Image (cartoon, rainbow, N blue to C red; front, side, top):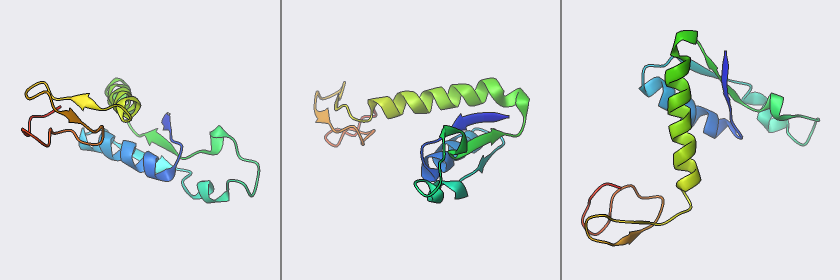
Length: 102
């Protein structure tokens, strides 16, 4: 079953890798069509997507994807370390000052 449509092949492989790291069998499809965008009329239906190989993993896969999307939406926001109060840029998950995790 189709579980996720990505905006780029790289994103599709990132999400697929996250799923696989949690024991969810998934595969990326339609990544080759991405290079044709602009050449022929393509829609969101032809974006790279992730296919879930076992339907019984759907709930776990959706939770993993939801966590990924939540983190992506927070990527542009600096965060403040709860230990030392230092402001840390969004791409870091560990405080550069005291090494406490986000």
